[in-house]
Amino acid sequence: MLPEVKTDEEWDRVVPDEAVMRPGVEDLCRRLGLAGAPLTRYSEGSQPVYAVGDEHVLKLFPTVCAEDGVTEARVLGHVEGRLPVPTPRLHDWGTYENGWRYVLMSRLPGEDLAVAWPRIPHADRERIVTDAAETLAALHALDPAPLADVLGPGDWTAFLDRQRAGAVARQRERELPESWLEQIPGFLDSVELPADGATDAGQHALLHTEFMRQHLIVAPDGWRLTGLFDFEPAMIGDRAYDFVAVGLFVTRGEPGLLARFMKAYGRTYDPRQLLAYTLLHVYSNLPWYLRELPAPPEPTLDALAETWFA
Image 1: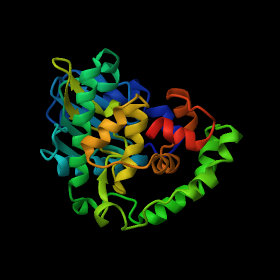
Image 2: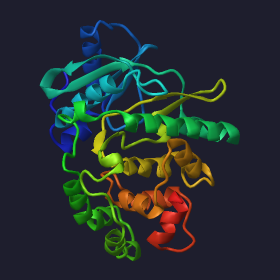
Image 3: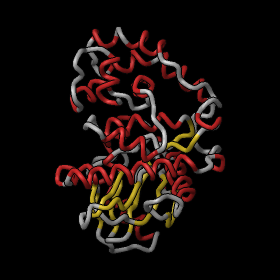
């Protein structure tokens, strides 16, 4: 009942339109034995995601990105029960009509950390950051080999080369001022990043790639970390790559928090290396980060690295 979505135009016409989406979601729920359960669509996220009653979450993947549903399901199965905090339990996954895929998972109890953050006392924030760091360390300690058939990029060095070649163009598309753009090539040339197979402990790790407040769940009764979700953009690569989202979206330049995170994680990273990975990240949007995070004392990438990642 859901139409094919193979282009950006089809995406814009179909995915935001509940008049089109909801009948298909209701039909899929019937097939999954959840007929009549209340459906509530989440407003955030790139994919259409629905709470199905109080216990389930249904995530859909349109035709154009259906393989991301395979990634989500495989990673959920791989990490279940192996991290210090819960991850969604995988109940079912598969194909729907017209090339769509779906993942049915358990609903984690608690509240979005990004929403709750302003209400959380400083001491509780510090504890949550520590718990989040231990969770990321446990994720990175898992053997990623069983997922190598579904997770990219495969050749880490080639991936970095591709990202480096397009770094200036990506930020120009996002309307980064020329005074920043002209600094990018020299900055990237000055930062040494691990070559393929030369990362920590001589191996790559399973990366979340969007380890951020928006994907962490907390319980208000005592402000405990109660979940980590959204493994659709997972990759295999250098552990430091995951610290881009940590610095930008978890600690966000708040004094002392990134140092606390790194101490609990068990490894400290060079701020310039993390800014280099920020510029090379597949979702990099420097103008947005400059609007959202603390401003550097001077308009240079070196100062920016210290402000966000020191």
